Image (tube, rainbow, N blue to C red; front, side):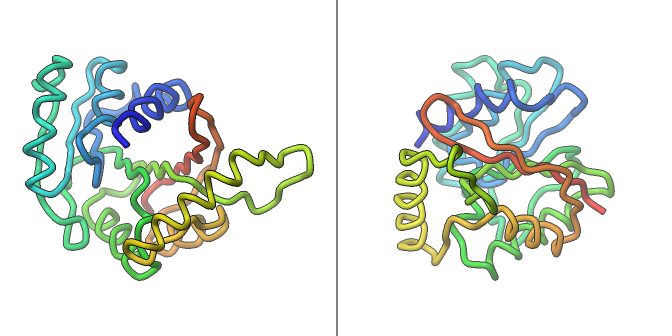
Length: 198
């Protein structure tokens, strides 16, 4: 998964402009590959990796090796209870799909409570397009989504959701969705949802 996330980070930085932000939080960011990918390509920005304590301990070496350890705060905690404040951008990748609707809404609600009005939220995840024309059908993508759907359902009752459900879920949590854009990192198809806290 770390290898997959490293490729996603490279493509994400090409897809989205992180330069206007000062402090970026990666919520449930695993060993830090996504956040480190942003920090290594965007100078002048600080990061917050928020994860369970045992994961944070293993993440330290990545930032030290990359030389970004002086620009990252490693904070342990439980995103089902709370998330850290004082960030102007929150990222959450491949996490909401792991949880059922109730828990996914709780995670988004905790981000909303921690964020100031106008704060940006990025959701990076596999999503099912609401409308797909014959020209857009990609059998590899469809197979990938089926495999992901099975894997996440087997853990916490999560699932790959349609874009419309992400819009509704993020909106209900108090964010205004600005866009959902698909992108491909050379290995995996992703969707980037951009929203602002109301």
